[in-house]
Image (cartoon, rainbow, N blue to C red; front, side):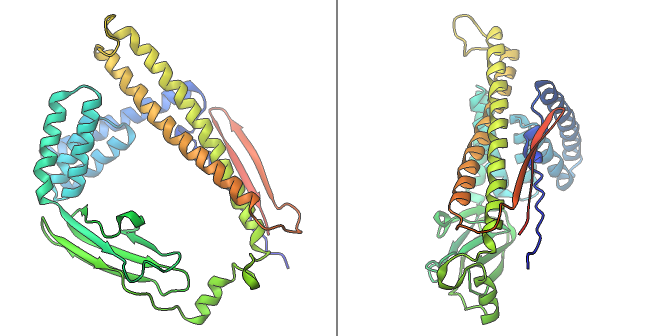
Length: 335
């Protein structure tokens, strides 16, 4: 008996700014800038009133909407005021890097000095997995984010407070521990213990994805190919987004040339510096989008063409969707 699965992938939402038209891109950018400025002003006022816990989220959202060196600097300062030393340290280094790219020597110097002053105060967390490292499929997370194998055994700066470490592996009981780093310059080592086997019922449920003899179950083939089509669709959209922002970056850079000196095109007036910054931001988005798009396209192809043969008819449908200012894919499938 067939079980029906409907997958409706809202891949159109992956279209950064949701638009393919330069005019729509500009409108979205201006709206984000307006919101970011409002949040920045509110955040600075809250800081002036000593309400740092309320100010930091506003400054953080402002930086997300419209990244800027000044906003990043004030956000790092806010994090330091509420004791999030690791976030503040990383934020000052990020601000210093951005200031250097813009030729803002004095701001870069101040940001690096603030980061250097925080370095001795950082609390660090080390995750060791010596007894569990040889378990196939082992995955470790810190506060919900995956911790890559190269970071195992490395002391990583973290904000003081509570941190949850989780470790999971196929056929094993999940492990979880919460630790508390109190104050500054604290240091804790968390060791992931040897795993215990999961109960037989849980192991058999996990094994249903594989057919007897190590082959993949026939029922998982359509699902795998549906996922492959979704991933491939993400890749196509990502490449399209990257192309749009690459064109925008080139246009901004060309516009900036008119606001730079004839002797040295890297020495620009205020308008030229602003346009160069926007070009750099658009170029960064293009690089990320095209990288993700290319990787997703390759991953989708690998998933699709390495899926075991199935006697079933194709069970997935990919439909491009286009609307004024937006584009994406609608994917549906069943098994």
